[in-house]
Image (cartoon, rainbow, N blue to C red; front, side, top):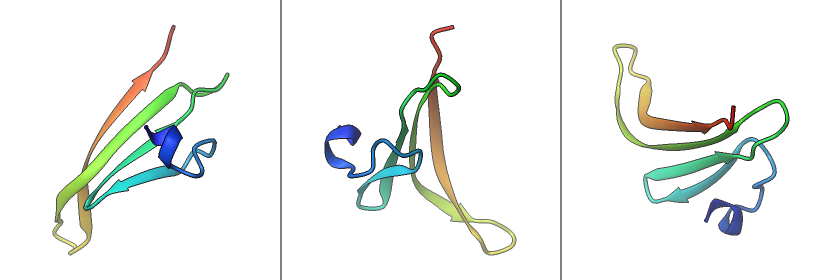
Length: 62
């Protein structure tokens, strides 16, 4: 889905937005494994900086 709708899928920072949430995908290469990140929601920390909630999934065939 990210590959279909994100215009810069081949780049490490390709992001697909769904309202306040986003999906970031990094295609697998010889040096880096495939990674999918889902982020959204979150809270402000003690320094009043926004800290989104995120989940990372990395797939490495090894």
